[in-house]
Image 1 (cartoon, rainbow, N blue to C red):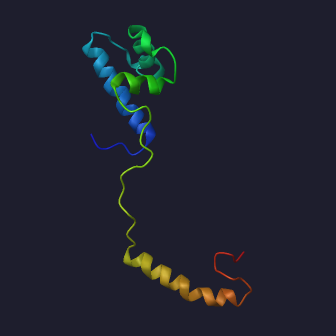
Image 2 (tube, rainbow, N blue to C red):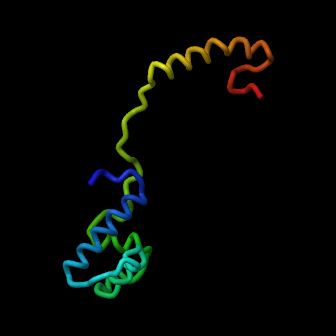
Image 3 (cartoon, rainbow, N blue to C red):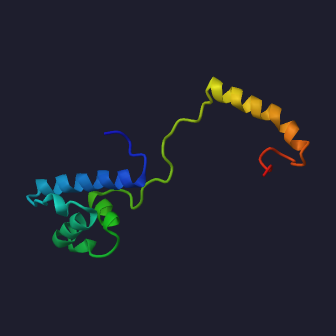
Length: 110
């Protein structure tokens, strides 16, 4: 499985892993109970130590994960294509004519 890029994908990954672990323990959840609240309810039923808290945090704690997902996501730095570099150069060339209209920058022109 690829590295999750959002917190929602990360929560889904941990929820599916928890469902598989519950299945391995002999607890079956139908597809309508495989949501975050349903999985957390089953965990709370078999593990009294996880009574309170957010459902996602209960699942993560039971699975032995960090309490919260990492804020930063691995990504590639933006590399401008030749077309984008050309457009940026044209924008810089057009900026002096906009300054003649009274704007200090092309970004401030109404």
